[in-house]
Each structure stands twice: as structure tokens, then as C-alpha cells.
Image 1 (tube, rainbow over the protein chains, first blue to last red):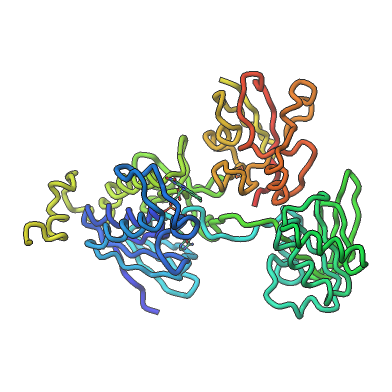
Image 2: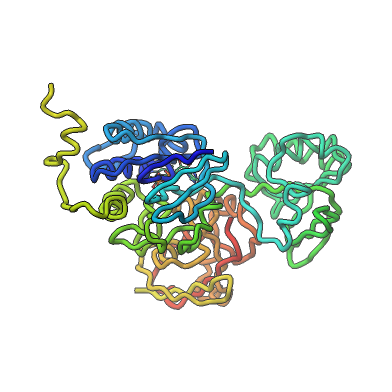
Length: 341
Length: 109
Ligand SMILES: Cc1cc2nc3c(=O)[nH]c(=O)nc-3n(C[C@H](O)[C@H](O)[C@H](O)COP(=O)(O)OP(=O)(O)OC[C@H]3O[C@@H](n4cnc5c(N)ncnc54)[C@H](O)[C@@H]3O)c2cc1C
Ligand code: FES
């Protein structure tokens, strides 16, 4: 497939990525923006579109949705090109610039790359168990797509929330034997589900074991037993399938292996330019890490401005760079056609 | 300043200076202690700031081991929860915590 060429490629269309498109536009850099999600806005749109935010300067209150709409409007004069439903996967160096490929196979060629991936993609939490990868997708799962593969099998469901209880209740009738494994007698799941589960346990339709997952037994991706521990005692639960429900976490996934320095799942940057340890690759917003970093929208804006000042030097190395305020910027005057109306 | 020691999963000690009133999670994040991810920023909504409190502090400061109901619920989303498990965003630093040792579990997500 032909490469899509751009001066800057921004990964993530949350507030930091959107404002980066504006700031890059201000210094004369064209950008393309990609996001896994079908719409722009990041956490503000996904997690709290209707909640008012109170700490955006000059907006005493603005909802996540309004903020997103205004940011999109603000960067629009610079014509950033959005590619939604695209997950960035790999980064390669190519001459002076980079090639980024997405999960769907699109390839972008860019002079600079700006990672604004926030908390990353939202994925299920994985327990720190030895040999877990061997079993994942074969006999260890984090969600149920189809019930059929669980029919007639010995199934262990681990967790105490709604997903764990709902699936335990749903799968117990078709499984050969279903065991719910949870660390305590109390459950955070809805009381009605807890009551239903207890009735099923009493009726012998499922087992409940107190304990925490400690290991996996089996070979070639086929589970034989789930090892658990409770109050210092280890025991095995014979099992063919294991379902784990420990909530979700944001994970950078492939972006963690792009070659720059990463600490605790976040990208280490230099605070003068928000450049990573790979020259020409920048990181801004929640995804970046430096001493004193605050995960605030406002911080992402500041980071975007400094990033743009350095990024333009890679994109237009021969140009003379002078800092201009937006009030006196010729670029913005031309883009917004000031004075024409 | 209150000295707090985080021991990461590799056994490396990270001595950090915490301010009274901040949370232990904030002290860890400010100093980039590996393994304290704090995805939810301290809202007791992610369990990625899980730590084990040095059991030898039990006599000195029993309250270091007392978990709220919300915290207990959230710990259902952590792995290898022990008697001395806490969510570090739920503990405010006080002067008498000077020298406290916290162990960071193997993997938070
Ligand atoms: C409930 C809640 C309330 C909050 N309240 C406030 C507040 O009052 N004030 C404040 O300042 N902050 C608040 N925040 C924090 C604020 O939302 C974040 O700091 C902000 O959204 C970070 O912006 P970002 O652009 O860095 O990342 P995000 O908003 O997380 O956006 C990152 C984007 O990158 C995309 N992405 C990730 N990986 C890839 C990939 N591989 N390929 C393509 N796209 C990718 C994601 O899909 C996402 O759209 C709140 C957060 C929450 C959860
Ligand atoms: S930071 Fe999320 S629970 Fe402590």
C-alpha cells in the first residue's frame, strides 16, 4: 500500500494530540492524526463527555465534549487529516524520518512523530503468572466471545466483580464444572448476582473457592489445573479453561517497544522540547513522564507548545525560526483570513 | 520531609522524600518509582498503586494496615493481595512515617 506522507504524525486525538495539531500548524508544520477510537477527544469524550471540567484556563467550566469540539475547531484552520479507527503499531526509521504502520496495514511516512497516546489502549489486566502467554487465547481468556467453547469443560472464573459473577452464572449450566475463585467472602458485584451465585453454590450447581490465583498447570497451551492460594495454603483446581476478570488498565502495548526510553509504561521526555530519547520522536500529554509531571489537560497543552518549537527544526531545518505570538502571527492571520470580513 | 523507601519487584530500593499531606502514591509517582502506575490518579478506581506495607510497622502504626471498604473492594482488582496490602493513593504521608518501607508487587496490570 502507498505510504501516506505527512510532515508530522500525531498518535492520539485526545486533548494533547488535538492541541499539538494546532501548535504545529502555528509553526507551519502540517499534520496527520491517528486514533484507535472512532472519534476524537480521548478520555474527555470516552470517560466524561458531560462532566464539567473546572481547570481549563479562561473556561470556568466546560464539559469534556465541549472542550473536544473547541479543540477540533481550533486546529481546523491548519487542516489536520484525521485517521480514526487506526491503531499505531510499529515505528521504523526511514532516512531522515520515520514510517509508522497501523494494525490495519496503513503506512505513514513522517518527518517527526508525536506520541500523544494518553493512557494507551484500554485492555484487561493480566496477572503476573509464569507461562501465562503460553495459555492465553487457548485456555486462558479475559472475555467471553462465544459460550460454546466452555460447554462440557471444567471452567474456573477468577474475580469478584460484575463480569466475574455474570459469566459464572451464565456458564455454570453448560460447563462440566464451574468454580468461582475469589479472595474473600464479600463481592463488589451487584447484590442480586451475588445472591443468585450463592443459591447456585448451595444447590451444587457451581463451586465457590476462597483464594487467589497463583499459577497455571498444563502443557502446550492446554490447562490442566489452576493453582490457587488462600491463607498460606496452596491448592489446585482441575480446569480446562480459565476466565480472568480483574478490571481494565490503560496499556501502551506496541508503543512501549518503539525504542525510546520507557519507565513504568510511560515515555521519558526532555522537558525543554518533549522529545523522547529517539531524536525526532516526541511524547506529550498523559503518556509522557518527567519529574513533577501532572496528568492534566493543561499540562498537555504546554507540552504541545514546546514540542512544536523543536519539531519544526526537523521539518524545516533550513528555515529561520523566530517565535511569534498568535496575535501577530502571519500564518494564523492568513489561515483565518482575518480582515476579510 | 519524610523519608519513604519503595522496594521495587527487582529488589531495588528507591528512597524518596515525601511531603506531609501528599499520598504515598504521589510520592512514588513524583519520583518515578517503577511499578506504581496509578492509572486513575488516586481516585481509588484502578488498583495499580498496590503496595505491601512492611509488617514490622504493625505495632508502631496499626492504622497503616487498615483498609477502607472502598479500598477493600478495589483490591479485588489487584493480584496477590496480602494482609499488608494497601492502595498507596489511600495513605496520606505523616511525619511519623519517616523510614517506612513499602514493597511494590510484581506487576500492576
Ligand atoms: C473521570 C476523569 C476526570 C478528569 N478530570 C480532569 C479535570 O478536571 N482536569 C484535567 O485537567 N484533567 C482531568 N482528567 C484527566 C484528563 O482527561 C487527561 O489528562 C487527558 O485526557 C490527557 O490527554 P491526552 O491527550 O494526553 O490523552 P487521552 O485523553 O488519554 O487521549 C489519548 C488518545 O490516544 C489514543 N491512542 C492510544 N494508543 C493509541 C495507538 N496505539 N494508536 C492510535 N491511537 C492511540 C487513545 O485512543 C486516545 O483517544 C480527568 C480524567 C478522568 C478519567
Ligand atoms: S491510583 Fe488508582 S487506585 Fe490508587
